[in-house]
Amino acid sequence: MGRLAVWVVVGCLANLAAASSPSPWKPLSDGVEYAELKPGPASSDIFQVVRIDPTRARLTAQMASASGKARTAGDWCESEHLVAAINLGMYLDDHKSNVGYARSGAHLNQKRWLSKYQSVLAFGPRKKGIPAAVMLDLDTPFAKERVDDYDTVIQNLRLVKSPGKGAWGQQPRRWSEAAVAIDRAGRVLFVFARTPHSMADFNQILLALPLDVVNAMHVEGGPEASLSLRGPLHVDSNGSYETGFNENDAVTAQWEIPNVLGVAAKR
Image 1 (cartoon, rainbow, N blue to C red):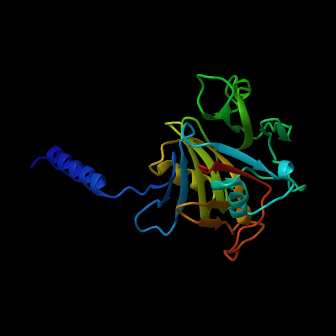
Image 2 (spheres, one colour; image 1 turned 90 degrees about the vertical axis):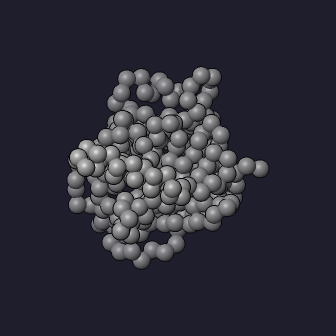
């Protein structure tokens, strides 16, 4: 058998194996699903991912500056009837304000735009004919003008620049990571990894997973990084390790955080 024929047979067998393997995605509610993905079969590293179709499920931003109280991600789910919640972004010492610009409807959590924060998530379209959610690179033309057409706008530190290019060089610092991304189909991804990574390594794994990520932003690292699920699955995940802050894996419970991105449960 020739080499080309061998590769054809190998490719066909691989496709058959992939087709016969069960899907890792578990439904949480209409338009929302959850998976635990590994970078390799022998890896102990787990990336927890919530995938949201914003045309079918309602994204929401919940802020202590509006409600008056910080909560764990799990408590945010309970109090605000969310099927999933992740950090909205890093916050200032007042334990209310997002580091970058943050607006939800008429409520303005943070008015400043940071020039070094080059990623923005926007959802809740104010007019017809535009995507239900977008993540844009602020160093591209007319990005700020585009997000004016959305009810909720959140600026954060960029991880991945469109069309799927890691924005970080290698550096020694590592931390547990909470991130928000968007895929080529326009679905929003909540991504959590307790195992600490440098951001370059995190991006490399994220882009290699079968998620088709186009853009991604950092929303928290270390012990504050959180992901919670309610409904068919009850999950409360939290980070621990962060270089220069908490260099251990000893944190076993979620910390209170002032702001979350969530998915409203069907009621």
